[in-house]
Length: 113
Length: 112
Image 1 (spheres, rainbow over the protein chains, first blue to last red):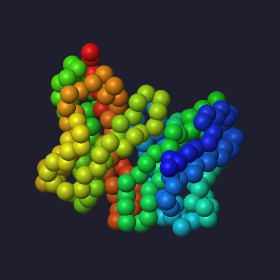
Image 2: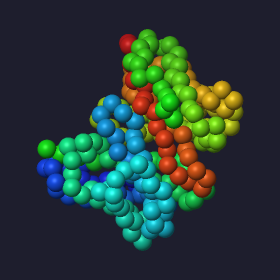
Image 3: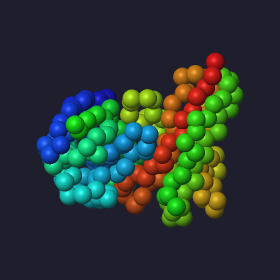
């Protein structure tokens, strides 16, 4: 049973660039959430996708956008990168609308120079 | 007031002891509560979830929920050095799935 996968593992970008992170949910799961975790902090919710629609959004600027594909995989896009965007980006998946137990992928470590 | 509060620690316990991790929250309407373990440089790993008042046991782990007092705790019995990690408390928000709100985590160190 494949768990949540994310790519790439690590990424280094410079200020002003754009980045795309990818996530494949756990088998049987159809809902994907994205979180940002700064060093020493708990994860912060960015947004959640279900049925290819953004269902909920956290307090992040419009520079952060996402997409969900028909196979339930998802992308997180960040435009105009800032130094403060350096963090671990986590994808979590859950199965169906009646459960809220989320399982995390290994994360993508983004460094903005 | 933060929505979810945890002592950042570090909490240090000797091997074989009981480690007690606590979490308080502000939203009285919260219905689902989760404990995640996060090793340094890794992603959070789900340990337990609890929805009802009282205790829920799973192996060496016991989650305790008291909605009236708005706290949830995690007890780890017979602590092992491999339990050394950061423990994250999270609240589920919204019906039919939704975001998780995390505390900042408590660092646990189990000394041999």
